[in-house]
Amino acid sequence: HSWQAVACGGTTIGRKGMLLAADILAASAWDLIKSPALLEQAKVDFKRRLGESGYRPLMEKDQKPPLEYRLPARRNSSGE
Image 1: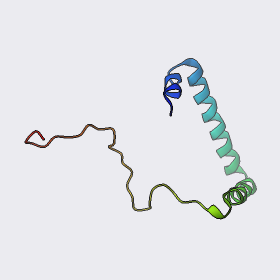
Image 2: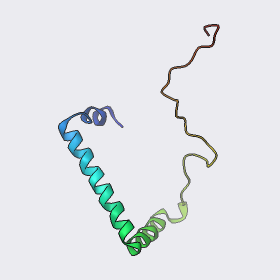
Image 3: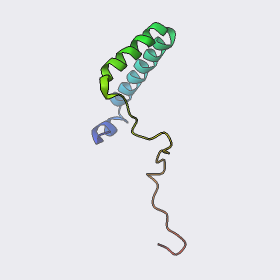
Image 4: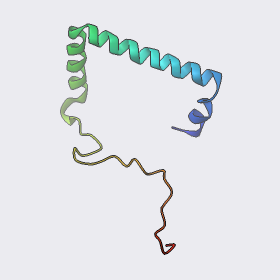
């Protein structure tokens, strides 16, 4: 996220925007759960939009996510 997006996160308008986005995502998920035909249509559309390029995740299947990237570097017992 940009610093502008982060700065808005703690404001009233930022909170309203986040709640609206959450409502839309939840409603979309509900529509897909309740309508198998809609889900199938979405899958077909997704494959059509990908075309021949396909989809390749940024992380390999056996790669673990870097969950500790924000932790400070630890020093060993000698202070290094």
